[in-house]
Image (cartoon, rainbow, N blue to C red; front, side):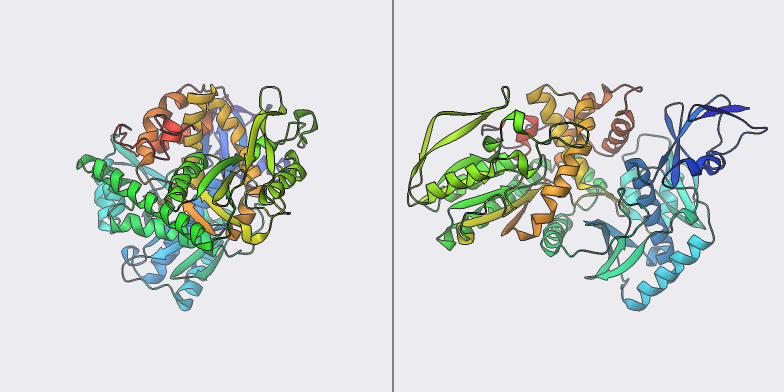
Length: 550
């Protein structure tokens, strides 16, 4: 038989696995191959190639490949923990969320994660890696899969599969340990050489390489503010009985969604009110600096915060840092020659600081408006004078970076970091990355308000993410307050809007694999209407119907 590997014809006497073919061409790839692409479809390396197939490969440097490595490393950890604890249901841990390059895992049931347990688990993981044990995948009838996971005490999966329409479920096995994994896996444990385990709070951190540097486990960087914000959201979900997608689907089927929406909106409003109260109590704050990654709901948040500030006798005025963009001709370009609107040099920092200092001194300032069509800053007679009880609410990507507001006294600034930090999990071992929720938010909004297709949004996303990692995330811990804008039910709402957009992406498009992944992800959720959401909800910024100008 013959197959075409990266365009080159290769002849085999018998059908090889994609892993065997990968071994022959690994030298031509800079990083470890973990998946194959055959005739436009992703294939795990244990599968056999078909005659005439056109084959290429994905490595741990690719997003899909990196996710595969992470998913496999989680199952390796769970298997090792089960071995050390003595039985699968006694070794259960929940993968909570990511803190930098670490995945925070907390104990379940009677399990205690102490130093001896951690050392034993790490040693067992290293033993399993050395044995090159295969990850085997078998399609189980849904009812049998439910019985299997019930016998292992994995009731989160039992609950999830109640809403499974398919007749079969793909179950992975590693040396007698069974688990369900949302996505592809590496062929065997020998691929998982780069990891570390660190004690952290009540649990542990599974440290893994980034896609950018897949051969190196980074040092852990403490992000205490972020950790507590994520933990607070997670524990709130647990208190109301929504820890996983299965829990959410149960709540929807039980007719309790309308009450859930009211409760969470009230919780968010309470948090916004607390931030406004803190600002007012300081007495000397004149500049509220709001920053966060794309699709965090910054605009709606700034409006709702302004309403709360008014209840304290303050008069807020919104300022968009985007209005201080340099003229298009002076915008820096990235390594690909494209305009880099994310970098600090794309902002007229000097003019911004002059205007803010003049306002602080009581002067009247002509405020700019940036014309995105012409790529020029304009002055249209918008004059502003800062009175005694006035306060500026400033929103922009660089709001937390003191280089952006270097001339302003520190005591005059109050910095807020906002992001959509997803705390809901598919199940206890399959977490939902916060970036997925934000990508879906942006996709829905882009299509509704900007005429941008889902294909374009997905294509632009890596560039957006690079800007966030360089210009936002390094400053998040410096914030005076951190606000989580995610709503625990929102993916069920976004599903209704996102699915048609994702289905429009064609198989031959480069964005097809990501669209297919997101469609599969959305299948876990029961879709619900947005009609019960209030018109000041943050999610209204994306699906429409907001009472604010967003």
